[in-house]
Length: 227
Length: 132
Image (cartoon, rainbow over all chains, first blue to last red; front, side, top):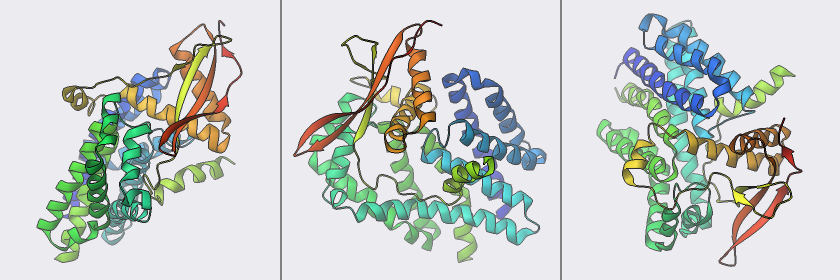
């Protein structure tokens, strides 16, 4: 995947993901409709290639307002990834030359890989994750399962044990998927399954869409490093 | 001060720690009652069952659940950081659910100790809200 295509694809996917977030947010906080409406308009502008740069900068500015308004994130890690993507795309459009624009997109790809590796590493270091107890506790009493029925999965010890190990190993081994385009495809399919499970079981729909938005940067970087 | 606050909020996004689910800590539930009554009710309780079709629809439209997760995050900020902003937000959002009522809320944290689920109240508010 070429650099320009990866950048443009990220912008289009981001516009759609932020529009989805903004519509949900208007339903949650109606009094914030004016600035969320502006955010929607900037998402529409981002779909027009000629308006991409000012739209990205505007969305980054509103991202700062979002942080101010909610005194941090509203939706945890998905808000952080949203701002990270906006910051990297803003930097890519502000870059004085192609080298620095590529560095900005590469930073996003590196952070995407780190999001899996660090998350897997900290779990692996925790005995509760290695024994399967941690994932059992997520289902048993955490605030995440979307229905009481899902709490019964806490009693399926084999599911929580092997599920926990599958998550940890996939996350920690993620850099290995960068060795070959087909390996990366396999890695992204596994990651998509992981994000989809989180979205369905724990209602983390915004995580699913925003993490997908960072994927073009990784596909581009993998090709750039191995070509 | 504005710049410092923005930097404090922005830096974790630009240089994220990505330590998702490092440990499964005690989990908050927000409970509310009419001021003075004995009837505590959980705010935004989850349904007993959710069909696969409903879960799939929530991929595109999930505002109530995302707000419920925000309430959980606010409860953690109140207990861990003593955040006045988080308490104000919590009271405002709970008041929206039961307008024109004077309410009290409490934050109950659930954890496992010795294999059994334990509930501990870590915060209880003074009465708030009511007819304007």
